[in-house]
Image 1 (cartoon, rainbow, N blue to C red):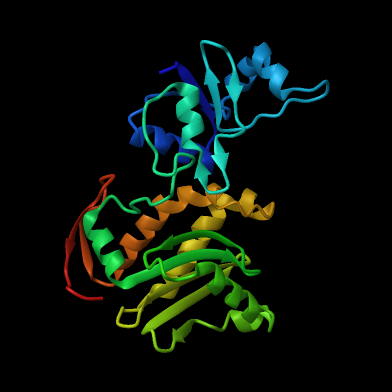
Image 2: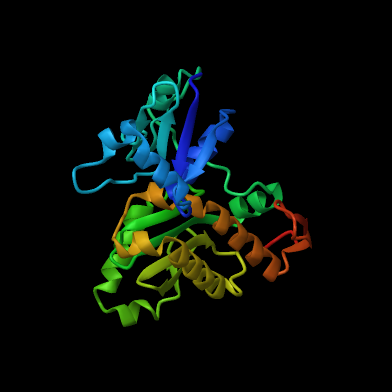
Length: 275
């Protein structure tokens, strides 16, 4: 494997995705962040970087940026496609052995929470979770039931908003007749947090936790949201926050008890067999 480094920055969704992919595939890497002034200054001294990313009047710092130390070359384009990492390109570039199912890019099927108990309860009652703009653009989603068309559902929500945002804000629950499925809707920051769940799930505090999720999502991705960026890959890193949100909700409704929440993977105990 070729020797390489990656240049990243804080709150960079694609940086987090790339680093996670390297870790999951056992590929070690050295990381440098442009948040430190030293890194941009060093890049500006490198002729390979200047030739590729600088013009007469300015330089552009793209992240994640992959640097092959032997050749000195930098790569930013072609590492990501519309659906995720182009793993074949990166493997070929780094001369890393491995086979990918689609031979082009990763299919995003992450295990949301590393805690098996939270995962079990999530899959038992939740069908899907999504965050979209009030206009209907889906930014982030977790889809347990693959038969659901979340894009179609967000278009439906967008249609509801045509009758007035004030009316959309009054809608908290929608029952989907014949499927025993309900949908919770919370709107804030011109975003909508929706949860599709089985009708026998306890709904106490669901709106409050959804609003907390929207606050956190907006806080982390404000710059992307304000720039109207809709590439879902930018928002994948919200998985960790979503897992904590789900865990807190399960603790709050007395389904789980947190024995030790100070750990990276908290120790939990199930208190009830149903939600």
